[in-house]
Length: 257
Image 1 (spheres, rainbow, N blue to C red):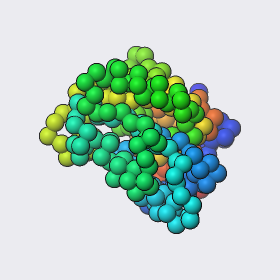
Image 2: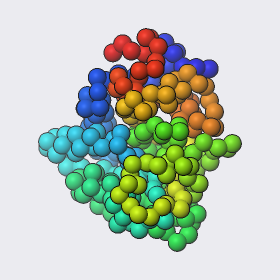
Image 3: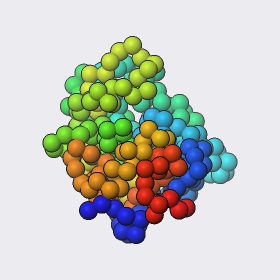
C-alpha cells in the first residue's frame, strides 16, 4: 500500500527542509542526540553526496560537546570492490576523511569491508561475523540511490538478507564518487536488507531534484524488489529528511513542515 502522510508507520518521522544545508543541520542534530543518549553508539555510515555535510556538522557538534567519542563505533555500509583501499574513490577514504580520523575512531571500533579483498565472499562473511558481535546497529545512515538501491542492494528479482557481494548496475557505476578513479569497480560489498532493517533507527537523507522521482516512488509505489528502498516501509523507526527539491513531485500533504 502506498504511504500517505497520515498513514506513516508509528515511529516514523518526516522532516521537510528548505535545502541541503538545512536538511544536513537536522540530520546532524539527530546523530548528535543519538550519540549523547548512547555514547557507545554503533553508527552504520553511508557515503556519497547526501551525508557529507551531515558528517561535517556531526563531527563539529561532537567536538564542541565536551565529551569524548572514545566509545563510538562505526560500521561501513558498503564498498566499491576491486579498488585499492587507498583509491580516492573508495568509501574507506571518504569515511576516514569525514568520520574516522576527525573523531579518532580506533581500528577496533571501525568495522569495514576491504575493497581489495582477494576473496570477496569471504570478506562479506568476515564483516557479517564482526557485526554479529556488535549488534544491533543503533543508527543506519542511508541515501536513496538513483535506481532505488540502498547500500549496494541493487534492484533484482530477489534481494539478499546478509552481507554479500553485489553485481553493480550501470546506474551505480555512474556515481560521482567514481569520477576520481581510473579503475572500474568489479563488484560491490554491502550489508544486506536484513542487516539494515535490524537497525534501531534508520536516518534516510534525500536531497536534490535528481532524487525527486525516487522519493515519490518510495512513498507511493509499494513494496518491490525492483526498488529495494521500498522495504524501508517495513521498519518502525525511519527518520526521513528531505529538501524541497527532492519533494517537488509529492502531493501537498507531504509539503508542510
